[in-house]
Image (tube, rainbow, N blue to C red; front, side, top):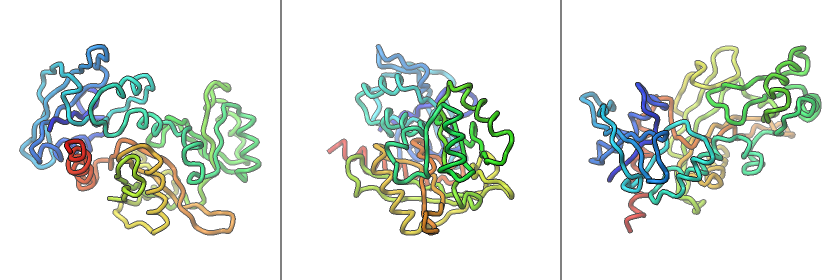
Length: 317
């Protein structure tokens, strides 16, 4: 099998060690692997520049050829996007490439845009509005959000472009003006999740698009924020521990994945409190690039085995 891992050329990789885990997962089973730079793709010719990936002497590590060569995209059996491209025009062009995409590029774009959650997952996310009007967001803060909310850039990641605002904070007006860029940028505003300080869970779910019953949770870990913090991003110092899910968490994750139009998805979930005071899981974020912050190669191996043993095996039948 020929596998292309799509990521910009550079000294390192967008997903750091997880890129290497993907490469080794395929290489260790005798497949040919290349790194393909998505910024070099010419959709008129259907070709992009690639560098051959080889196993290094130490487990899980890889080496790359220095010389890049042009390669037809349709020669690959599977293409995995492990880059940072979320451009919709690029995504449309990628759908014309006749090879297996893990994950489909337009669904990858929608996953990166949290603004799509309001329509795709309305029953799974905290109370949420989308607006570029500071006055509308402010009214929600004092009204439906009970004086405390999180505002974020729909395309933000790793906890960036996000702020916690409280009604008694005298500076929240300025924050809204700055984040909306004077009503030019639409923000996602959400009720503050009740148990956010406890952290959330990253859950990996795999399945076949179009078959809701096929989705299953393959790995989950808890992300504990730093002392006194409310954001559980590993990039902001949170720690990770492998966990099992409760039945209600497992059910939520499988139902979200079945709506995602993705073969594999990394879901961020947290516990909230409903109107009756009960603890319930809610969806925070979907991630089409299934990654673990370089912590769990076994979780990435589950993904590579799924692609080889299920998705590509089905294509060959």
